[in-house]
Image (cartoon, rainbow, N blue to C red):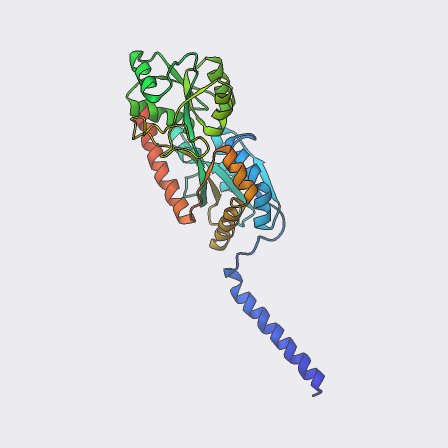
Length: 330
């Protein structure tokens, strides 16, 4: 056999061996799903808190994933429409979602939902928290701190009301937690969204309510609203002068909004790791970190195992609160 032919045969054999090695290890490699973009279904409207977060991170997410990222807002039915779409998606890494902690509340405030949370999904990561603050209309409520607000509410039982962006939302339940912890009474006025809630808070149609820090700050600066305190466990880097309610004598009043990445049920472990690592890289990008800081969000990315535990624990926590607050499922 000519030397050149023997060399060619040896090279072909080596190439075949290399291909076999790659094939054997393929399941362990977190390869990008072939073709197309990665779609993030958001079960809420454009301009919402989660939507603002995802759009700020969209370019970095696309870079980290190595694929285009499409944001698909599917609001409606308190988030059920978007979540149902995710639950029906193929577990191939092409369809994911960013959600707020409203998703663990939904099953307890609606008479029925077409899925189980989190059993019909794959929690990938709790990405961070959105600090919450309790605000008052300064014209109608002359309180400047928690003790003064509690005194006013106790002096006029049922004489004040509080707003929320909807029955059973995190903003509603966070306000209910304050009322319960303080031992006071106030009437709940639900709205069909945060926008109208804020408009009526400023206009004086309602007296107080809980908002995300970034939503509240712009109106606090103008003097239209006043922050009484934050329900976070510690003071906020974005608002260090705002005291916690624990500091103000209500140690049991600790609650934050949080946001997470969710996939459909049965998402392979390799894809879970791939998405988790991409999200961690994206939210570590300097421009995304700056955007999150401006929004008042605190990035604390946990593991998939921690995400599952959080979904379960928070679901149980809010189920108990819904029952205690006497929220009637709609």
